[in-house]
Amino acid sequence: THCISSAASDVYKRQDVSCNNLSVLINDILDMSKIEAGKLDLNVQAFNPVQLIETLSSSLAVRAHNKGLEFLVDTTGLKAETLVSDPHRVSQIISNLVNNAVKFTERGHVALTASLKGSDEDKVQLHVSITDTGIGIAKEHQSKLFTAFTQADASVATRFGGTGLGLSICKQLSVLLGGDIDFSSTQGQGSVFSFWVAVDDVTSADSQQSLALSNNCLLYTSDAADDMQCV
Image 1 (tube, helix red, strand yellow):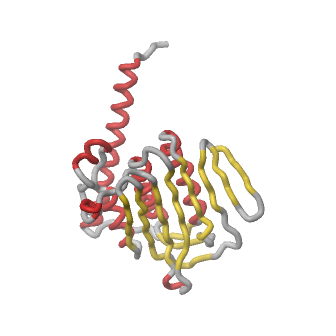
Image 2: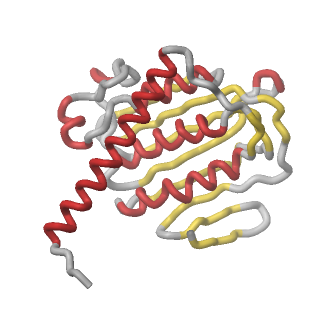
Image 3: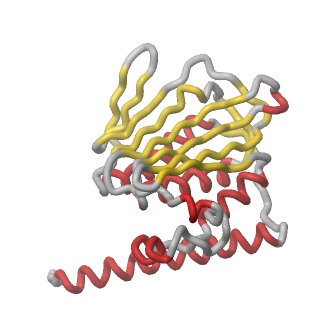
């Protein structure tokens, strides 16, 4: 067995982070290029929105927990077993927004809320909001937030890194899916990013669950009972 020094271990970790960042950058550039060229194909299909969010949450919670943050998910307003849209792109938007929230939050929580809005079946929308208690965004930088390769300011780019493409891609994907994205933010207090997409063929569910990820457990809360399952 060969022992690895702490210095070598640190180098390996930095290389791993650099490789991951490069992979994210390449994928973001490819997505943006396809979107701008009108070549991004959507894979519209039926999916269970609650299951999608639960699966995403299990992986997204790890990074939040590693920073000592509480990760909360509320799907009580998502009363549907089946929606029709592009589940991969919906997941991509949620992942980008949650990862951003975790990155810019040092203490407190990140919360995801999902619901359906609209009574007309032809105009039903899936709404998802990501709330954080992070650093927030100064008013003078908010207007350029969805511009490609742009971050709030140079100090943010230096401190937190990133490609400056994530939010721009979220914006474009939301529009492609028949919706849009918006946000509100107060510097020093946190931000709320909300997006919505058009969905078809909604199949209602009789009962829903809200869930909260705290420590290393997934907590489901329903009208009938509480059920805790370790992840």
